[in-house]
Image (cartoon, rainbow, N blue to C red; front, side, top):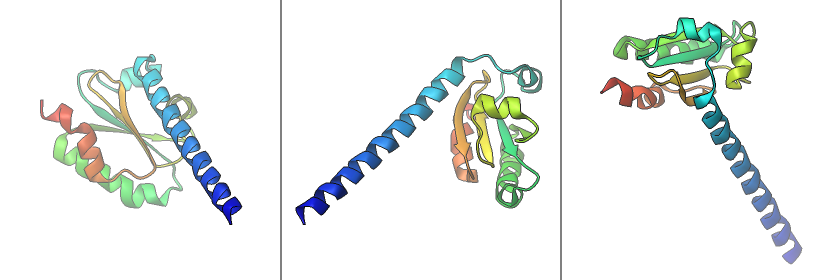
Amino acid sequence: MLERLYITLFAIAVGGLLWAAYWGWLRLRMRRLTVAVLPPSLQQLVQPGQPAILYFTTDSCVQCRMQQAPALERLAAATGISIHKFDAVTQSDLTSFYGVMTVPTTVVLDPERRPQAINYGLAPLQKLQEQVGSWLTT
């Protein structure tokens, strides 16, 4: 009986360590991205001084079309923020730069074109509004 308790506690500890390592890696990646030079294709596309959202999708992504795209359209209509849509398959330089491994993925850029949030998977409208809200109210 005591052995099972030890095994369970060990499994919980390992799971907690893996979770902490994953989130630490994400924070480190975000810090590196904030000082990295923007890829040339984005330097011309994303205007400095305005926040923007990079939206990575594919033609076959149903969740992208049915949920993420409408949320981004509502956000753009309400705030005027620019949304830049990229095919995650054909834009491999950008997907590797931002670490996109799933679609939909949204990258929220601040007015200096630095990533402030990367949402792997579906990002609801409210979450996106919170992520860009501080730049739109100033």
